[in-house]
Length: 245
Image (cartoon, rainbow, N blue to C red; front, side, top):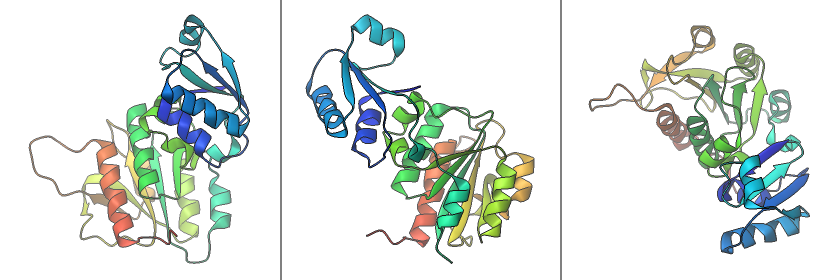
C-alpha cells in the first residue's frame, strides 16, 4: 500500500492520465483545496472515506487533512528501462537521468521536479541504498512524480551498458569534469548524479564516457546535487529542444 499526502502530490496524480489508480481518499476537515481534490477523485471514480483527525494523523502524520491511499503504485508510475528502449524511435534524441544512491528525499523530489520541467524521458534509481519514492519525495517534487517515469533497476552500471547499446552517451556530474557550457552533449545523453556525500561511485564513473561540471564562483564548495541537476538538464534541453507539440 502507498499513501500520498500534500495537496500538490494528490492533485497532480489525480489530474494525470495515469490509469490503474485503485484506492481511496481519506479525508478530514474541509476547505476549497480539499473540495477541489474530492471533485477530481469523483471524476476518477476514487472512493472517499471520512476519517477522524486522530486516525488520519496515525496513518499519515504529515497529512494536511487529506490522504490518497493506493492499494499499489500504478504500473505507469514505475518506469521500465527495457520498455523505454524498445519504444525509442531510431535516432530519436532522449535524455535519461541516473540518480546514484541519493538518500535525501528532498533532493530526489527536487530533481524529479526538474526532470518534469525539462522533459527528461526516464529517471533511473537503484533498488537498494536510495531514498524510496515516498510521499516525502512526491511532495518535494511538487507533484512531478505523477508525470516522470522512474525505473528502479538492480544495477546502474549494467543499465548504462544497455543504454550505450542504443546510442546513449553517459556523463557523470563531477567538480573536476569538463565545463558543460563548452562540452559536446549528444542528442542521446545520460546525466549521472551522485550521492550527496560521496558523489558518483567509481564503478559508475568508469562506465561513463566523460564527466561534466558547472563553472562556479563564490565561497561554498559546490552546488547542491538538485541544483546541479537542474542546471545540467536545462543545458541539455537548450541544445536539444525536443519535439513537444
